[in-house]
Image (cartoon, rainbow, N blue to C red; front, side):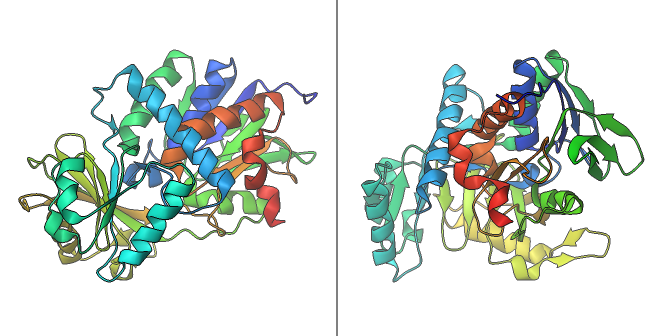
Length: 372
C-alpha cells in the first residue's frame, strides 16, 4: 500500500475510459471531478465501431485483458438483455477473394487459444447468423458467436446517471486541460481558461490527445493514431445481429434500426483543416454506405444520416498504455485502441490502482514506462 491516501481525483476526458474510471472511483468513496474538452463522448467514443471482441492474433496479456473486458459487458448485459445499446450477436469476418488460407489460419489460431470460432462456407452463414447477404462472401468466413457491440454514447449516458447520483462533479467544455505538478507530483488540473482543480491524483484519458497532454511533463508516449470516420445511417428494416468486418466495410447494428459503418480505405480522402476540423467528399461517404448495403440481405438502400471524423486513439506500438507515470507520481494515463472492449475493465482496474497504489498484474506489460 502506498503511504498517500488518494481521496480526490481529477479525470481529464469524457469518453468511455474517463467516465468508467470516474464511476469506479466514486463507487469506492473517492471525490471525483471529470473535465471534458467539449461534451461527453465528443471525440473517439462518439465515433467508435465499438465491437466487443478479442478476435485474431495479439499478445497474450492483451488477449487476457480484452477477454476480461468482454466479461464485464456480459455481466452488464445479463442485468438487462433488452438494452438496445448493448447486444451480443456475434461477429462475422471474411477476407478478400484468394485469401481463404489466411482466414483458415486465423480460425486455427483462435481455436488454439479457446476463442469461440467457427469457419463457415457462404451457404452456412444463414443458419449461424441472420440478415447477411452470403453472396458477398467469396470463399469462407469466420463467425465468433461470443462477440458483441456497444453504443458508447449510450453507455456513457448510462454511467453518468450513476456518476451524478454518487456526487461526481462534471466540468463540461473546459477546453484544453493540463496537469499541474508541484514538487514533482501531480496536484490537479488547470484549464486553458486558467481555472484550477486541485486533486490528489490525475487521470489523463483523452484519447489521441493523451500523448500531447503528458509531453509537457517530460513523458513521451508514441502516438500512432490515424484519422478515421464513423457513419451512422438512417433507419432501415433489417435482421442483422452480428458485427461484420469485411474487406470494404465494417458494419454493426446500432440503436433505432440504424447501422454504424467504418473502414480504413477512405482515409486518403479525408482532409484535415488548419482549425482542426475534417472534411470528406459526400460521394465517398455514400460509397461506404453502398459497400455496406452489399453485405446485408436484400441489399437495402443505406443513406448516411451523419458522420464524424477524428483521430482513432492508437499508441505507437499498438498495445494499451495504462497506469501511473514513473516520472510524475499521482498522474495516471489511459490510452488504447480498444477503448470500447476495455472500457469497463480498465476503469475498474485503474480506479483500484489510483486509490490503493497497488499495481494490478494485468497492466504489467502496458505501463507507460516501457517507452522511456
